[in-house]
Length: 638
Image (cartoon, rainbow, N blue to C red; front, side, top):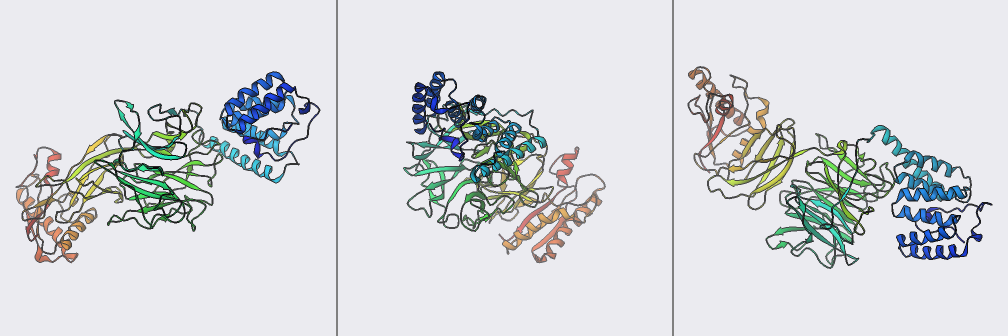
């Protein structure tokens, strides 16, 4: 009789000598018959049935060591680590010499249970065997390195207070076949995922969160699902775009390409190949769109990267095309494989899988945060128990920063992979965000205007995102909390829009509505230059004013016939004559700056009004602040 050869036991190349305590040739024949039947079931993939039959073999011969070992191996395959450990130990107790080779799978199951110290000890015992061949030794040393890493991680960041309790999303989402690659909209109310149907085809399904419950999922409407394999998708935060992986499509450039579809009144549009800038004759997959839809992250094994499959980013250009992909470089990518990127709604936190960075074994999940200069930080392993000895897959995190979704084949799976949700550990959460929604529209007609909206962090001056509205001017995005922002909009034929919004005091997960009216360029049209700053009772421009002033320069250069007047206003504090002089001088200072930037003085005038034209009550500081303003007024040209 041979030792078990299926499942995890296949990694064992050496066979230990038989001891005097156990002789497989003397096993009860009835037990042997049960054992052979179980092995046949296991080889056909019927692991649970094989386990049941092995119980019969053990009942027929309680000292049948191979039956214990085989049951332990099968339970490990079923991720019943506790049961696997139990039956390995029963086998060890019957004959320690015969079972020595099984210290390696035993160690792996100990690690699966989270007992990395015990796993390391078992590996060290296994490595004491001087007769191990190179393949067994290499496998053991790899596991030893992983277990040592896990122990060190636990010392650095003990997670005693973190409860990892993935919840199966239930029958509305999951079925007897596999569901995976969850993606969710910014409001957390629409979930799109991949389902394997008819055992070979992949299609997209959608479920909405209504009255606190996920409703029964349905196949995506429109022309997106087909008899081909559509999978590994990303839905844009506003729910209007879908970028996905299409494999073996007739118009494909390689085995798997990236495709694009838009939501229309009649459903999802016919998929379009994203073209040769993105796709190659090699493999492109697992896309993730940034919240402003301007960056597309994905994985590819195109030659010339850092390792096997690397993570790349492509930027959407002003003409709507996508730039040539940029490799994220050796900070993110390794000589191994990186895949499944997910850029969070904060647009600053990236999650991905890797088998090249140090981890727990196989593909682990990692987090990297982008700094103020736009550089990605050193990836951090998400740690146990989010990462395990198994291969981890894609991860999606809602805008709240704590609600996560992933696919797994846990013990309560409906069948194959199911989609689960869990709460992220605090130290590996992305930035908490708030939602900002609104509409860009013509101030005179109220008609929506499709426009680009630039969002700038006032504290650093760095652009957080550049988002594009839909065709009706609507936008929806998330921004990290605790910051104040500048909203900029430039559109041909309109005065630019630039306003400060102090959102630092808004609570996380709150919705802030900011409509953006654009003033058509015409005589007497005017805008308040919110970001022109002076010292109290002074007329020297502060350096913080330069960004706004340069937008006026841009406006004048783009509209060479335009003639403007800069109007200065003050509150009513102090003498009226002094206020009039101050407002005149401040208006002149703005014109002087514009002249220094080669805007002809003949196209500009300045005038101070002092406190004579208030727009708010001067009895409060807030009102006085609104009255202290600089305005741009169109007085000629268009």
